[in-house]
Length: 70
Image (cartoon, rainbow, N blue to C red; front, side, top):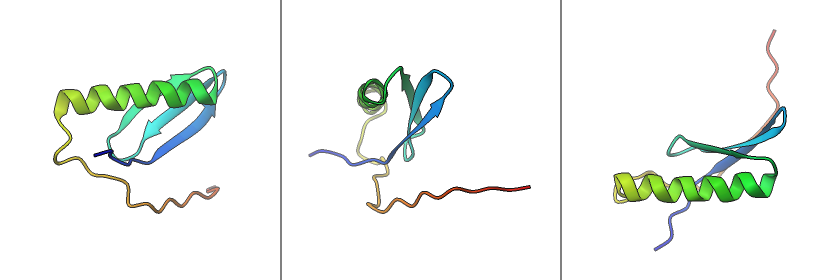
C-alpha cells in the first residue's frame, strides 16, 4: 500500500531543495522535477533501510505562509 508524505521544495541559489517533512529526508536537483524525483528515490531508500511499519504519514493538511520576523 502506498504511503503518503508531505514534501516541501525551496529554491536555494542554483538548486531546488526538496524535504520530506515527516521523515526528515532531504534531496536536491537543478529543476523542480529533478528535486522531486531525487526526493522520491531518497525516501524509498530510507524506507528500505529503516522499514515503513511505524513511519508517520502525512495528515493531508498542509499550511504554508510567509513569515517575517525582525
